[in-house]
Amino acid sequence: MNKPASSVFFKHRSMGKHRMIGVVLPVVLIVLTVLTGLVVTQIRRGALDERLAGNTRETVNLDGAAQTVLRWCEARLILFPLNTVTVQPAPDNTVQPAWRVAANWNTTTNSLDFTGTNLWQGMSAAFPPACVIEFATCELAPPIGRPERGANGCNGNDPRWMKFRITSRVATPAPDIAAGDRFAFAQSELRIWID
Image 1: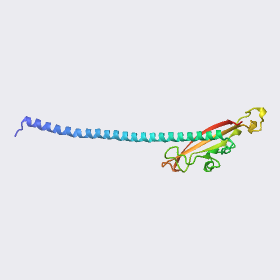
Image 2: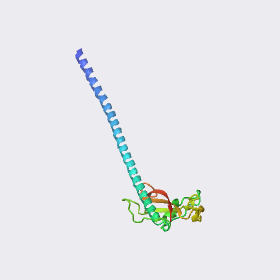
Image 3: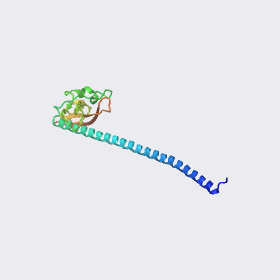
Image 4: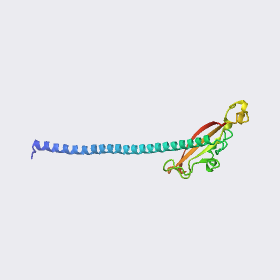
């Protein structure tokens, strides 16, 4: 029996429809995969941005606290230059500076501590804000001062000239560090004329 031409035509068309359905599914899957990749990338980027912002916040807080403690120590030194705890600086450039020596921070005989001070919530209780003040008058280059007043100071300088190197330290707990605390330091030099 001969089939009419129209039945062959319709049969062929119906096969074409099935093939198009098979093409749409892979295209949709590819589009969904690309969209998922974009969403995951944006989520990761957002998390990284938040970590960077948190790090910046912590850095600004630590630096602000270190600068505040440094100003407290400078004020103390200006008010009482002869009655403030000081340490001797390293004798030359080959020795570790005084502020890097852990023993200078561990005792109140070598450092000016501000125990009980809470500059911001979350400061480390194990390491209160403190300053190590180096008596660095001998670093002044001669001649400084009036010769008629005598040159019996360090390096032949007038003994009323004094130089101090002040280093402040603050700490905050840092669970991401093995030692457990993150430190910030600030340093300044102060030259004082005592009359």
